[in-house]
Amino acid sequence: MLKIQKLHKSYPIGDSKLHVLKGIDLSVDRGEMVAIMGSSGSGKSTLLNIIGMLDEADQGDYILDEVPIKNLTEKKAAVYRNKFLGFIFQSFNLINYKNALENVSLPLYYQGLKRKKRIEKAKFHLEKVGLLDWASHLPSELSGGQKQRVAIARALASEPKLLLADEPTGALDSTTSHDIMAFLQHLNDEGKTILIVTHEEDIAAMCKRIVRLKDGIIMEDNFVNQVRATAHV
Ligand code: ADP
Ligand code: MG
Image 1 (cartoon, rainbow, N blue to C red):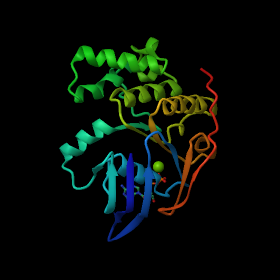
Image 2: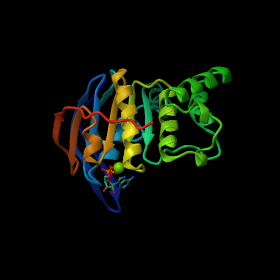
Image 3: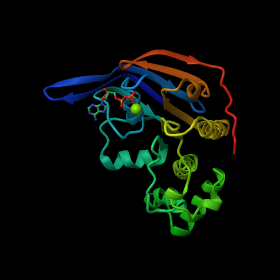
């Protein structure tokens, strides 16, 4: 699914630079559910953003679904991003003045789908996350867990090959976090490849593999016995 080799990334700070990723090697196969762990500032989001083609590495190779990701035009990058990747964020990133259905269907507009097809697909995915009855509600009318499920429906609507989640439970209480993880496990059981950035051990334990980053280097990379999350909804 993806292969990263000798990846480096620095951010400029004034006249010097901050070396954030210092030679990352990582391969992920189809069907995996991987946690990227590490303390705050260890480079987790930087790595996920590069994997998600939201940012570019300075050095190294990245191959996503057999496509080398390097020096792509903005347009080409956007096409691959749409085709391959779905994103979930800690802060949900829903559009406040659009209802749940519109939030899920909006990315499909950029895929060129006709209105009827967009609504049909958005409804299907809202139903999948158990929120079809909430289709006409604004994000402000939803709980944190419901917002994250809308965000998951939005990510899934474009049928991505790889789902990327940056601290998806970071803004949720532990019961709701387990619900979200149970749903992500269910998606993984169905075959979806998922990468989850987290700094919480119990969340990482619900994945099948844990990659530990420290100061921009992978210190550990192990397959684990996945703890099954208990859903409450
Ligand atoms: P994590 O997600 O593990 O907390 P990040 O990847 O967000 O870590 O950040 C790693 C380091 O890079 C941090 O020290 C952070 O302050 C710095 N950093 C992240 N993004 C930028 C940026 N756009 N410009 C400058 N420094 C950045
Ligand atoms: Mg982060």
